[in-house]
Image 1: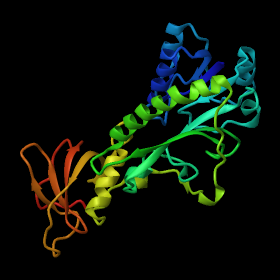
Image 2: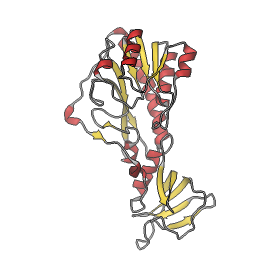
Image 3: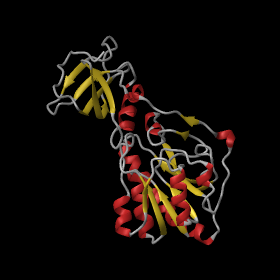
Image 4: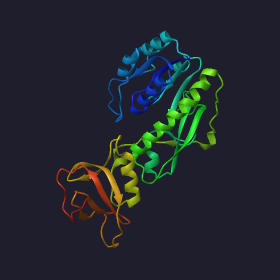
Length: 295
């Protein structure tokens, strides 16, 4: 089974390495030399060079140049894991077995953007790891493999990211032999269960201490590395917050945004709408004083 592999993030790299370890027949790799919006970008060409696999840099996989390159390699199937652009009909129809994509949610629920961030920001206690056959829609094709993925209250974006990688590798062990044998599932998605997560913007990452403590905690853990980080505005600057912890209760007559305490290791305790929160890891160059305000 001849495979073309498309990807450009760390998740892509880990699954490519797994496929190479399983001695899958990869005949071509498509990746990006750099990315302006993927915080976890990885250029896969070094892996292609070591394995002596043809590699192409294509910003637009739907371009005529890319289509011609794919045709020349005559793949049976394409694996597209970690690519933030929709594939169009011309490339979807090229391999006789289709194109397998990946989405880290319990499809048909939670299609759309930022699927590894929203579960944490929304405080969900589970998500899923889903491989599916891509069509012209967004995350709407038949499901090949799906596994539940638990989320604990202590998990942050990095914890969830690597848990998804671990589970996705196990799925590859199961479904690649199924694909090679020609006996594999294709489960249609139930359109009555569909919702779409929207694209996040800069304001979605801004901490407002009029929020509840748990809301702020979820925002910080959802946007921490490998992503861009949540932030607060202070004296005209955006200050990144990488880790937080829910603090104790305080009298309701204290205003949200007031700095209540400062630890010896530069953590800040700030009043929130319903209590307080510790800013444990941050990028303040100069710490504000206790009794200053963020609002």
